[in-house]
Structure formats: C-alpha cells, structure tokens
Image (cartoon, rainbow, N blue to C red; front, side, top):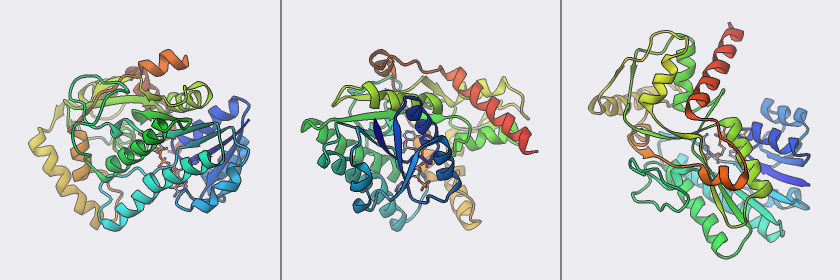
Length: 333
Ligand SMILES: NC(=O)c1ccc[n+]([C@@H]2O[C@H](COP(=O)([O-])OP(=O)(O)OC[C@H]3O[C@@H](n4cnc5c(N)ncnc54)[C@H](OP(=O)(O)O)[C@@H]3O)[C@@H](O)[C@H]2O)c1
C-alpha cells in the first residue's frame, strides 16, 4: 500500500517513516528540500521523495494519487516567534497547509486520512486527567496553540461530515533530538551544564516517547476507526517529577531548587528580547512561560485499548532519552 506522508523529515517524521516502512508500505514523503540531510536519510530508509510544500496546494494532488493512506504530519512548532509575519507563516503551514492536505486527499478519494494534531489543541486541563471528549475551556496561549486548535477543529468538521479522517494527538513528545525547551535542557544536563535550579515545578503535561508516538500514528493509520481521535501519551508528569528522574542519572549539578513563578515568568519575559537581539534560538519566551504554567493532563488509554499499542511510562521515556542524549554527547567529544 502507498502512504503519502508530510513532515517526514522532522523529529517525529523520521521514526514515523520507519514505522510505516516496517509495515511493508511504500512511503511517498513530501519534502521541501530533497537535497537536505534529513530528506536524504528518508530516501536511504527506502522512502520515495517528492518535492512539495503544504502551503502550495498544487504540489499535493499528483503525488497523492493511488495512496491508501495520507498522513499530514507537517507543522511548525515554535514559541516566541514574534511578529505578525511569522504568525501568518505559522497559520499558512499549520492551518492552511492542513486544509490543503486533508481536502486534496478527500477529493482524490483516499480512504484513510490521518491528521497529526496535538493535546494543546484542547488546552489547559487543570489537574484532572482528560480524554478525547474534552473541550477547550480557555483561549490558546500562543500562535502555535491557536493554529493547532484551528487545524484540529477543521479536521473535526470534516469528521462530522462523514469524511474518513482520523486525529492522532500526541502529548509532549520527548526523545533524542527533541528540539523543544525540555530537549535543550536535557542536552545541557548530560553535558554537565544545567544549572541546579529548575522552573515551573508544579505544572506538567502528558508525555510520550518519540518512537512510541511514531508507532501510535502508524497504528492510527493502520487500524484507527474512521472519524475517531486518539491521544498518544505514556502518562502525565510535573516538571518536578521529570527532574526527579533526570537527577537519578549522571550529569553535572542536580536540580534541587525551583524558582517561584513570580520570578520564572519575568525571567522568561526578559530572556526573550535578549535571545532575539543575540540571534539565539528562542528557548525562554513569554509564550513558553504561559504554556509552562498550564496543565495538559491527558490519558492515552483509548489508543492503547483500541489500537493494541503500549506506550512506555514517564520514567522510561526520560531514562531512555537521557541515555541516548548522553551517548550522543560522548560521541561528539
Ligand atoms: N514535538 C512535539 O512535542 C509535538 C507534540 C504534539 C504534536 N506535534 C505535531 O507533530 C507534527 C510533527 O512535529 P515535529 O515535532 O516532528 O516537528 P519538526 O521536527 O519541526 O518537523 C516538522 C516537519 O514539518 C515539515 N514542514 C514544515 N513546514 C512545511 C511546509 N510548508 N511544507 C511541507 N512540510 C513542512 C518540516 O519539513 P522541513 O524538513 O522542510 O523543515 C518537518 O518535516 C507537527 O504537526 C506538530 O505540531 C508535535
């Protein structure tokens, strides 16, 4: 069977490509830059590359022809992007891009279409663990959260119209190569460079290992119920609980103290313009602080029950991530 995949070159997309190929499927991966290292790695795995862009609807129809499954995994995740122009670009990729992929697939009569959404599309849950029936209670905390919410709603509208669309909603995805803030902090830790102080100790989220997330998306594509949504999560953890696991492993200084929120938030607000001025990647930002002072507590029970998959638990997610990041750090020395 042919699978048309967007976002194959990314953090989730690479193990996802592998999970699809392992099922014996032919993977046709839409890539913006076929010559890139990441795209070439997909080709070496056995995927067929096709050049295109989800913001360019015309680039999608021909390579989708004959596909038994279409997976829209492309997206732009970033916090503190700053400015209307960047937000318009995020809208074009995360919302218009999703619309282009889903509608083109449905127009072509593709029988199974998966959109990779996110738990942030439902927003803050408070301390109660929620499931796929939850509805958003408060406005989105960032353009990323807003655009993922809009794309999620678009996919749900298609589902309600009877379209064969499924939603895969990962929790916060962790693993080697994670380019979100916690991934950066874990890399600092294994290099002995993390300060002994953490932030946002009492807040947390649903988490999933990147390989389990990839397996979950592939399982949704393979045997998910049409019109269904599946949360992909191995459990919920606060940042204090995550750092307790990190502290068990070799690193530099253990994280023993936490800045109170009234100091953490201003730190993030102040760091953002400095990072921007120094042209550094934006790690700490007002949007990051807003998201990090929320709870996104969700259960992956439905996916485990209905798709027959097993997510590794929180402890295993971080021990595996730390071990692989440590191995990579040693190799790079
Ligand atoms: N990471 C998480 O914690 C997490 C959690 C929940 C949901 N998600 C969702 O999972 C999906 C994948 O996330 P990720 O963490 O793997 O992100 P990532 O590493 O940043 O990868 C993003 C992918 O999207 C592709 N892409 C971006 N803009 C595109 C465009 N205009 N046309 C075609 N492809 C485009 C990128 O291709 P290039 O190589 O060309 O840049 C890349 O393959 C996203 O939809 C994200 O919202 C992620």
